[in-house]
Image (cartoon, rainbow, N blue to C red; front, side, top):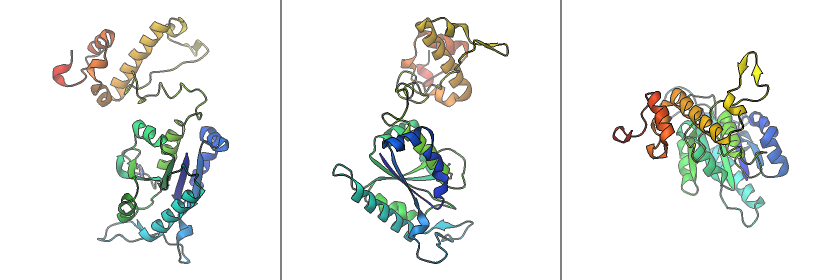
Length: 269
Ligand code: ADE
């Protein structure tokens, strides 16, 4: 997968040299290229922003510099690509006003051959940039959560890690991503429960006995109970959205004990 990142702070992306993503880059699974937006300015001050039309606080990133940067990165990528490579990347713009970035979107993006991340700072990028490229390729404005960061760089790090670990061969254990909270499957939309390793007793705290029993059926049941409990406690809105058809008798009993109802009112029980 090819990833291009355009930012006025390329230094932000040094974490992509380490750990799983760093190894994936060394192996060539991931081809990450970070570009300095200011390289496409033409004035001595390398200006990338200006005051907003209509007034208000802050500054807006200028469309001309973004247009030149994105055109150049696309031209370079298209020239480097083999015959199989698409002529255009999918463009991702991190912004707190975007659609929520979820595991489902991470999975969708992990299947793309080429992504271009455009990091905004200040009040954001002139909207015409997204409109212009949106006529020619897919452009997604995505938010990593309901809080405001100083710029898109950290959001891009988050997205690249979430996407990168889903690429074939990036995770050491191929099963690791299967049990993730939010991964598709039987445990979909359930948070993962607590985990333990040796020693069996630490500072007087014991590992739950069932985990030492070697009884795979009981362990699976215990894990599902803990996942349900944790989801209800920490993310009641996720728990409420569980499809009642996916619940077995034991699940229903646990939910009853916890006095928690799932699904539409008339379908519960
Ligand atoms: N830029 C600033 N805040 C952001 C957020 N929450 N998500 C994505 N990009 C952002």
